[in-house]
Structure formats: structure tokens, C-alpha cells
Amino acid sequence: MGSITNKVQLIGKVVIEPEINTTKKGIKLARILMFTVENYKNRDGKKVHETEWHTVVAWGKIAEVVEGYVKKGKQIGVSGKLKSRSLIDKDGIKRYVTEVEANEIVLLSARNSNPNAR
Image (cartoon, rainbow, N blue to C red; front, side):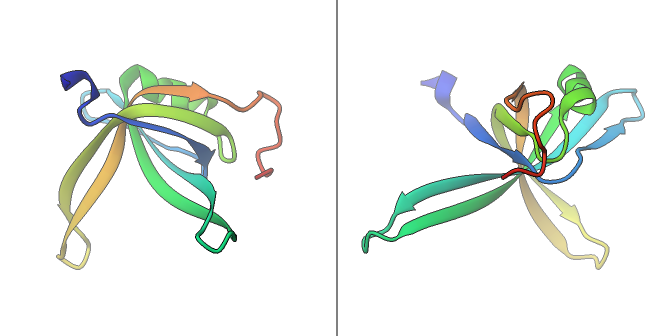
């Protein structure tokens, strides 16, 4: 049962250009904002399009791949785990953040596909 504990898999589109940073120790960090859409019919038979927003973080070699290939509007697949942390915002208020820490990112859009298509 341990192999499926805290596992996340998403397929969605990148909202903005990924944010790439390098730590003081020289390790790359990529932050991706992406969305997924679930389509279904509700009890009344009406089509519903439910959008969820996800922040994905990737470290090291995966972050380097993100830096080179992941662009706004591209469709990606992400496999990873949920990570939660707290931080103090600019107003001194403690906030809690949950992100997907990627252990694999798959590029699903064709290299020359239109990034503005939805």
C-alpha cells in the first residue's frame, strides 16, 4: 500500500511561463502554474466544465527540463506528491500552501503547436 500513498497525477495546461530559480547551493527550482478541466454532466443533464488550478514545483534535473521545454499554453502530464508548507506573507499573516512536487513531467503538446489554443 505504501507505493500509492500520496500520489498525484495530472494532465493540464500551463497558465504562465514557468518561474525558474537557482538556490544558493546551485540547485534549479521550477514553479509551474497549471490548470486541469473536468467535464461531466450534472444531475439535470447539463454539461459542467470544472477548472482546478495547481502549483507544481520541480527540482534539479526535472527543473532543467521545465526551463528548456515547458512553455505557457503547453499541455503537460505531471506525476508527483502533495507537499504542504506554511509561510508568512508580506502583511505578517501565516499562510498555508499545498503544491504538487513533481517527480516526472511529460511534455504532451507538439513542439510547434499553438500555445493559445485551449
